[in-house]
Image 1: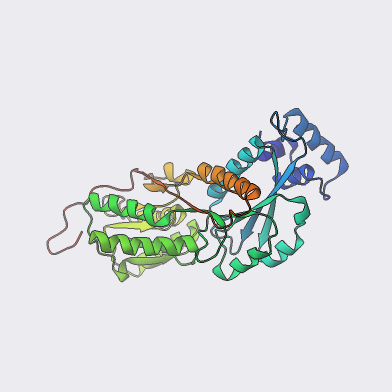
Image 2: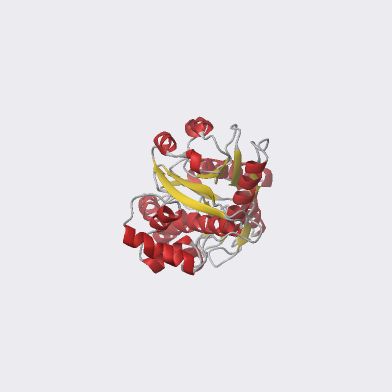
Length: 342
């Protein structure tokens, strides 16, 4: 039983359950007793045999800047959080969840660290100029979904370079020599790494990645759809295949392409990144790079627990790989027209 499931049974938000678990104000006594009864009924947070009875508190700090990445890709973040929550419960920790919107400094100043053993920081939208603020955290912490380049801390991130190379290898083996790029118009660490990885992979494989084959699209489905529709109305020439920074960009662009009667994959192959749930049921279903979000969550808890017991563990950076999921949005390259390029 997870916090989310308890919240659904009680008819409240997960944040309300978190407040009860951590004995915080902001909820009525009647509702608090109802939630406590459910927690007791489902034995939530009970320590394993041999563990200390006193709860150990951890915080998941969800930092949001624009929200376009974190909130438009909720399935990805929710899957990591569910895994963290399950791993915390199995190890006898109580997890609290807080959201920081565009004010990391203020959020850190408001946290009562005396009640915490450690912190998870969602760093998906964390800009490099904010990294030094994390030095103010007096307890062990782990940053998630950001490799924190040139900054000493513990982090669990996606191995963007290797995953993008696997995507490029796949397109190369399908017979393509010219690749297009559906690139996010919003810069974050992960997207910057994917851009570098795609350029490097194309260079090493001898593939063409032309400037005119890069399409800057907003990193959410509606924005990507509208931007791609605009490019098509301008008469932009399309490459025979494209790699997208994430699935929401790919799916939005695919909608615009299909509306213009551009066939997928007959006219253009599309490959995404993340394997969000909708990718499997889109039409055509999206070929993508799957990220093991549950593994990210488990590794985050284990790394934080290690840092809590070994204070010398201050700069452990773990990179998680991915796997290709081949679906209907990609196909082998057709023979190029005379004088054309695949």
